[in-house]
Length: 428
Ligand code: SAH
Image (cartoon, rainbow, N blue to C red; front, side):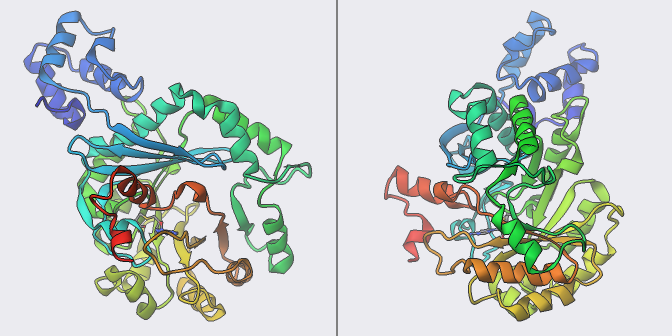
């Protein structure tokens, strides 16, 4: 089988071209075709000579993952299940929001970290993705936006603006508002009034915002990327950083600013330090508990890197003043959602420049965890808010299409045949 041209580093490819008497700028031209014009064949590369195109086609292939399944939620979220060249499957989720179009991508097929509440964990680790397979998710989702009539602009706009209910707001709330039930604006609004206000408005939006999403969706361009799909990006460090280079380079790569990219980790301390030294992407940490006992049960990785080590690491990171670390906290009924948990979380994070994303658990087959009730979710967020934290309480996106981590994969296993029963089912 011919090597995939996207698996060659730029230097390696430049050397290949030089050996064939080609100037080095040809490498940039080919890269631009691959990453900016999303070419799927060398034939399309019209600024290369016919001879070079034929030579490239003889020597290389251009990878393209197959979309094994695509589902669209009522709220505009689109979930892709991609089949890789060796038959492994991974998922990506496209999330339209007010002023952005975010793609959530995977870095591993499966995951080996065994978080107790996570559907992907039930699969175990299949393998690391190559950088090209990480980048291909962005290219393929972008192609779909270009070409799929079912993802019509109007539909993306309508769904992402209003969710399944609600009508336009007219009071001109800030355009920053997105799919959040609660949001603090520093310490300006605290207490139940602010919280209830935010919650009450979570399905609605101003006309100004509507214009915003229409504008973003009209461009139909992925504006943000989050490494929050299947797998642990920092356990596949080299390929993840290589993919980041292609995603962020504006000259020859896809050209998404690192400010618009967020990488989420279970908390691998040495790799977090390395990543923050080597890249400028935003960092999110999956915290999910405020003490070692609970975190150790939910996330086995905590036995390797304790909360103290993790938070000390976060305090010492070279994060620019205007940036914050995001802590993700999946709320699990009766496990980590009490008032005392919230207070302990405030103490743990005190003095860390951060924001907290409170994510009500997204139930899936094979898990006995439950999502807390609305009032418990709000109370949890409110305690953090009152302590001056910036808090987002996430509304579930795409829950009608099982958009949480690992869930489409699970669906697909059931869908294909009962032959390889999804681990979630098998363990029930
Ligand atoms: N391995 C990385 C990135 C993948 S998971 C990490 O753990 O950070 C992305 C986020 O989704 C994590 O915070 C994860 O804990 C959360 N998550 C996984 N399953 C979930 C579920 N069923 N409901 C809500 N959040 C979930």
